[in-house]
Image 1 (cartoon, rainbow, N blue to C red):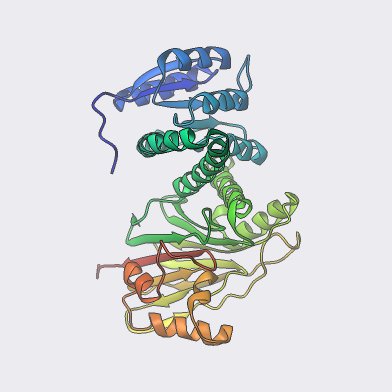
Image 2 (image 1 turned 120 degrees about the vertical axis):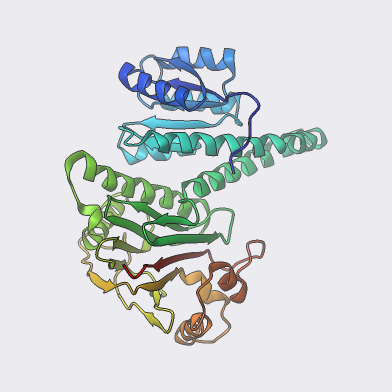
Length: 399
């Protein structure tokens, strides 16, 4: 639910290209926002200090002052002011640096759909309200022990900002694409998660989705999930910008992801299942980079395993991946869950735990909330590993 504001939110856009700046301003003014605009970094900082806008949109490459420097200045002076980077810079290192320096979101140019930018703005406005509610508590701690509290506050703010960014990057829960509904849950074992889920429209006919599990826990693994999402967005954009349809083909997508992750030299690897649903043919094409447990597909009468062995990503640059295809029943439920769930099942061996998971889901309608309760997954309990759930429900009529 969006936060209700008594006055229109004021948005400052710092963008040096007049056509892009004018397009953003025109669209957001039509959406009810009050717009402020600057064409370079120094003037943007001046307007920010004078006008105290609710949200700042900032390009990375600006005349007079680098966009990352503008971002650092704003977050240093007003940590509770959301900054959304809107940039055509495609280098992954820029995106990671922007997130490290306090950006709340990252939108790539050219913006194919201005509604995506508007949605990001409304989301950060709501989250900014939550941060403001915590201010009094932090100020009280500062009076007790200023030096110690300032150190703890910085750590807490870093973790909180990272958690908020990561959860903002997740797709909206209970999203419908044609006859298919996507639901997801993410339960980090620490403040940040090495598991990640995403689903998105590729084109009018195809829906892409993936579940990833990065080795390790905490901030280092979470940054890899941000990198992963950025790479997938680049592959999606390539379809519209140059006709490169890699994103439609799971096997090719995993091969490209594997090469890109290996070349980053992150000392991290990850498992990833990527699938593409054809809304016209009602088929699922998929490829698996070492993700386990395997997906479970139910037609309402029985649950079967989509066995799809494969190697993790980030280990061998020339690794090969296989492609599978499955018809989706008229009524179907597809369940993906990360291997953290197996840590909660008391059986001794991995095979016994997997069989217990099959037993727990067999005969269920695979209701996500019912399942997490039945498997004892609680958001407020200490978990031995990150746990992610993705449920895709399909129901087609007789026509």
